Image (cartoon, rainbow, N blue to C red; front, side, top):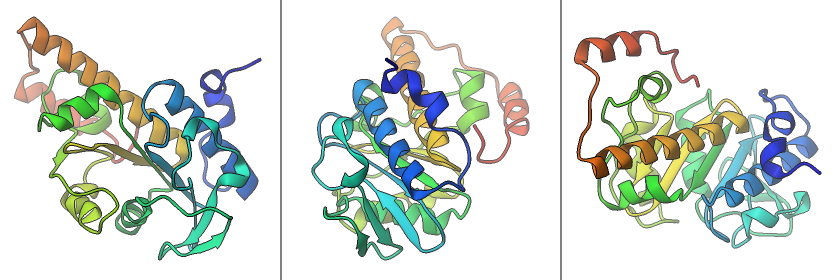
Length: 229
C-alpha cells in the first residue's frame, strides 16, 4: 500500500483545472503528507485551493490535518462565507484569501509549522543568507513577517509588503506560509523551506557560513523564473 508521502507526486499533479472531488482528495493527501513530516501537529496549519474565480476549498477548523476526509472540507466564497460543508472554515482563512487577492497567479496556499523553520521565525531570524544556489533560484530569500495574532486581521496585513515578491514567508513566533500555482507547488515549497532551515541551522552550529558572493547571487537571481519552483 502506498503511503501519503509516496503518493504525493502521483496524486497531486500540477494543474489547476480539476474537479472539486479531485481537489478534495488532494488536500487530504497533502494534509497527511505534512502531518507525517511533522510540519503540522494535530490541528495546526491549514490548506486551501482556489476552485475558480468565486470559490475556495479549505480545511476545517480544529481538525487533525493527517486524518482529514474529503467531506470534512469547506467551500467558501472570496469573503470567507461558507457555501458548502458542515464544518467551520479555518480561522486563518482570511490569510489565504488575502494571498489570493494579492497574487492572481496563486491557486493554492499552505500554512504549517515545520519545526526548524518555525524555530528561525521564533528567533526573529529570516532565511535570507546566500548559502545555497538552489535556494536563491527557488526563493531569492525567505523574509520574516512581524508577529501578528493568528486568526486576526492583523495577520494578513503583516504579510502584505512581502506577498508580491516572495513565494514563502516566515511569520514571527508562528510558522510558515507558502503558495503556488497548484497544491503540489505550495507544499513542495514548504518542504524546501524546512530543508534550507536545517542547512542554515547546521552552519550556525558549526560556527561557519561560506556565503555566495554578490556577483554569484546576481547571476542566480537573473536565472530565476518569476514565482516558479
